[in-house]
Image (cartoon, one colour):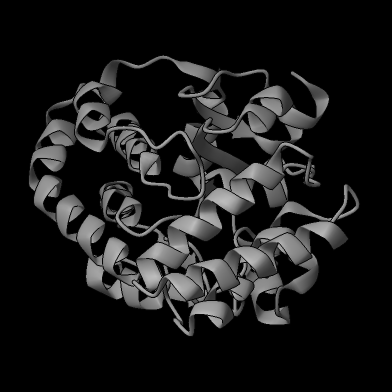
Length: 288
């Protein structure tokens, strides 16, 4: 997806939030906002959303001299998610369809997002997620492909959220599981360090994008990643950023799992903020 004029206020909101996370020095907050303003003057509707987000957060890191402004937040939400995990696991195992329940719990974790304004309540979402209807529901295709798959590639999203992804991985122990995280810190997106802290390495191979970029811009991925992307039997892409970079892919084995948190994404999918979705990417393109 390309950026829209409505993205501009979010860049300023994210920049001020991240600058405050990074430092208590107000002069650095002003420096950050000034440099974001300079970037906005050169931006336009030609930019891809992942390129704009990467630029915004590079500016924040450089202006504040902080390599990971969200480090404390990521640690805190990983801790909270790990505390909630035993109860979430009990809910999954007690459900009539544990695989479906595990998918839902993974989507529940997607509410942990400091990139959007629609930051929802994690405890409330986990409490209700097993009964929430899907606004877009391609689960029949998803489960059929998942059962037949030998290699599953999970494109992870946020720290904390990935703790809940372990519930799905636990349901798929008979398959080769690969989890891809960000190559360097950006927003509260999960990195290799976050994956290790969440225990994903005990269930899956961990790889990364090699970039401090939200989403999966395929034109910037390594040859090794592209080999994996094209050879995996099924690809599960979590979160809005992965949706924004992959929504034009016409692939029957690419499934997008996330919660709508942005009006522009809602317009693209025909959903409302707070809706949950499991989308087969080629069906989104055709509107079916």
